[in-house]
Image 1 (cartoon, rainbow, N blue to C red):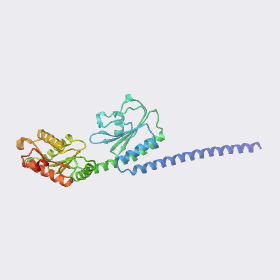
Image 2: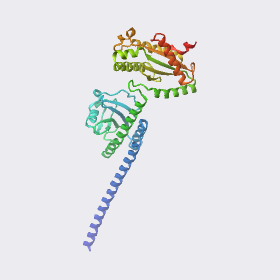
Image 3: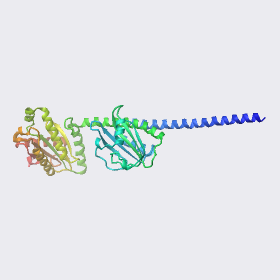
Image 4: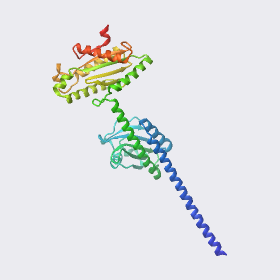
Length: 365
């Protein structure tokens, strides 16, 4: 009888052990399903990214709700210049300057060179990483790969406690970073394509088509808020002569240099475009014709004093420009008419000997 009881007890223990194993296996399976479900949901979201704002919104949601971290930092990597460009910092600190290769510390260099994530479980400020991050606790950095060879960017995650990223979470984040990399690469490609569609391929400033769209919008805004808007047409004097003497490649360099001068001298709100050939068009929002005349004269003087290659071959031994101005509402309320009037003023500046500024209002007063 006792032997039968012992046998039953042994069988019961065996069953209990099996049941415990099954229970653990079930929990492990359930955990794996949850892992796959979470990763699948994240992959769907990042797969649907259409632009940078969308990507940033998902990244904020991911690291504040789904996988909370203390801070995260998103960087774009420029392979040609071997530099990192800050895209977003969750600590709200300004970090707009690109970090060149000599400023990138070993921690980040190893991630870029090895193209694998790096985890430091106990990081402190004294170690430094060259990205103006006051890090302490745990630091985890993933390369965001554009393809098998090239890096599109980096994502750096920070928690203030040491050993704060367990292995299973690192494994999940490693997979998540692949989907983030795809989204970032897609975003950068979209932004590059968008930029190409609205900019002049030679000078890098806006093209004529995009200027027309912005002009229409700005004029509607000015009508709504009763603001003045001024328009300037700028033409490089004797440009055909320069091209004939020195060739189109040298002429292209003149166009690029003039575009750089205009971009540097004008406000961020001003809109500059290459209108065609050696002509540039400039829109000055919330600017009266009197104010525009001062801006135009400043630009004229700046170009006249600038050192251009082979400028000594030009009349008066320098590169100069003529400018024409028309303003809303003083001269017209229609965009096409304003462009026509500014062009007439530019033609008058050419007729008056070049290297001067003519306001359309002076032609009719």
